[in-house]
Every structure is written in C-alpha cells, then in structure tokens.
Length: 159
Image (cartoon, rainbow, N blue to C red):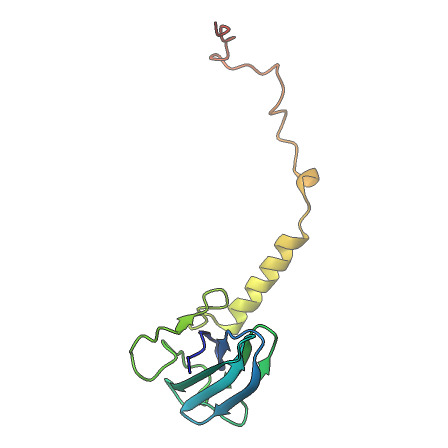
C-alpha cells in the first residue's frame, strides 16, 4: 500500500483535498469530525492507495463530499467553523512527503472582506471591457519629425 499524492487548499468555509490518482477504482472516502480517510485502486497496475489524515480542525462530515475524475479524486471538506483559516491541513506539524499545498488554487482570503472581493471583481470586469490600442488618445504629435530637440543631430554612419 502506498499513500496517494495529494494537494490541498483553504477557503473561507471549506478545505479542498485533491488525491492525484489516475484511473482510480473502488474509491472510498470517509469523513469523520476530525479525520479524513481515502483509499482506492489506481493506475493500470491497480496499486492500492490509502491515506488517513488527522485534520487541523473539525469538519461537518454530513456536508463534506468528494468527486472522482479520471485524473484525481477531489474532496470538499466543509469546515465546522467557517471563517477560520487553517495554516495546515493536519493536526500535527509533521511534514508528510505525499502532501503539498495547491498554490494554483490557494487564496489568502483572511484579510479580504466580501465587499473588497466584489470591488476587485468589478475592477477586473472594467479592465476586461476596456478597448485596445485603437482607443488610445492622441499624444499631441509625439511622433512628429518637425519637433526637434537640441540634441537631435544626425548620427554619423558606422563604418
């Protein structure tokens, strides 16, 4: 048995764990108030994977779910105390070789209010709706050759 490689990230009301096992079969995910258990057969050679995680904080096991795809199994763990950041996934500070942070999905939401995120979304939409280079203003003849500076002398040709 081998532990499956996993990535995790934190959100305001939930924690996500993605177990990276391609072609998984016989997937079993158990949610307990303070634990998450995962097992499956993976790959063409049916390697048995098994992970057990003592979680940093309690979860709502009835609201937690998982979804299997051809490439991985994504687990949604609903926090028992929404709005509380998890600095790590596990109760113990020990580094697990099979577990890493999913920085592609990580978001520092602790300091962000919902209103600020709404403003950011509006700003992002505004930037996306702005026109291209055709809408740039005329810069008062910046490309005119007639306006010569005193240091604009013709350079001698290179030999």
